[in-house]
Length: 151
Image (tube, rainbow, N blue to C red; front, side, top):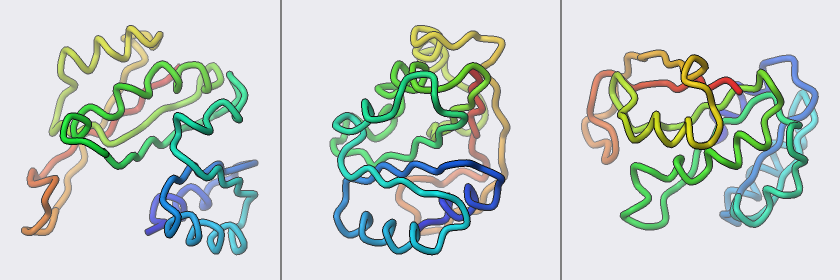
């Protein structure tokens, strides 16, 4: 849908990297790239396949919004990315993602972030009010936790 990409482009950024595995969505990203206010680089493939094209300690911010491919990944897909995010972020860089929690980080969640290298004092959140459609299949709560994880 490009909603997040549009919001990212509203900020004064040098470069915006989009990793996209779906062919149809990648085609839409190319259209977005052509009209974007700031430079956009598109890396086609799954993040695990293309992430090493991005140098370590080079990114100011990451929005990790993945689509789970298996039932097991539905609520913990982001956990697999924490180590990589820590490596790719600059000091002071911020990681955010869909956390699948309403108000607080669970213990396992915090433990996974700390194991990746993030300090507990830098694991922050904001609880956002949301109004999902009644037929939404993945979110029904009126609040959602927004992670703000600083390296």
